[in-house]
Amino acid sequence: MIFRKVKAFILVAALSFCMCQPVNISEKYNISREVVSVNTKTAAHTGISLLAIQIPKSTCIGYTSTSVNVRSEPSVESNILDTYIFNTEIEYTEYDNEWVSVDYHGQIGYICKKYISGDSCAYIDYDAPETSGYKSFMDYNMITDRSSAQYILQNTEAYTGKFGIRQVDGRYCVAIGSYFTSEIGAWFDLILKNGTVIPCILADQKDDNDTDGANIVTKHNGCMSEFVIDWDNLNRSAMRDGDISSCTESWDSPVDYVRVYEKED
Image: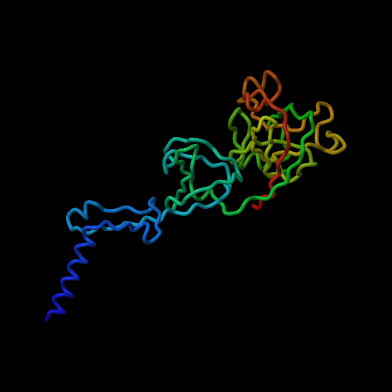
């Protein structure tokens, strides 16, 4: 009987000590303070602390599968913070089944999940000649061969977009020499010396007879890139100067190199 009383006394004393002494769970179980929270409201009523261990979501690396908008909220109705071009590498966290969240200059931005790919698109970079500052243009109505891929592209997928330039999926319709690519519909970027990236799609092919020996620039004017435009809606500054570079200040820079994507349909 005495042994039982002593044992009971020790048990009560031990329980009293545990209830009076705070236990540092994070140190005992090596859990980061940032992921441990105590439900103090429940503790006040019951005397027992309920630990809610919140495991942070892991971040992933992905690549944009097209030009995508970064939005202020996970909704297509929210404000657009920025637009990431195709094949941009991003670090993101899963938000829900439709959206991912990204760190956009210290604030949270959201990107539609379906535009994120786990794989980067392969590409080849080609240096541009020093004379590649001039960017000419041609009206899309000059493409008249109904059986050509150029004509089909203009009449099935292309539309008149920004600056009055024809576009497909947000990319500007441009003709370049066969040195770079000859596949109508191929995606490529013009990377300017000031860092600006102009996303393009091959909408026409410069004739080899009209370009230099390497099939890079047009013989008579040294132009490397020729934009396909809608004359009736062309930017007035570009129309006045005869140069697409005048559409916006950021485009008034020579092309540094051309990035051609090996994109699979």
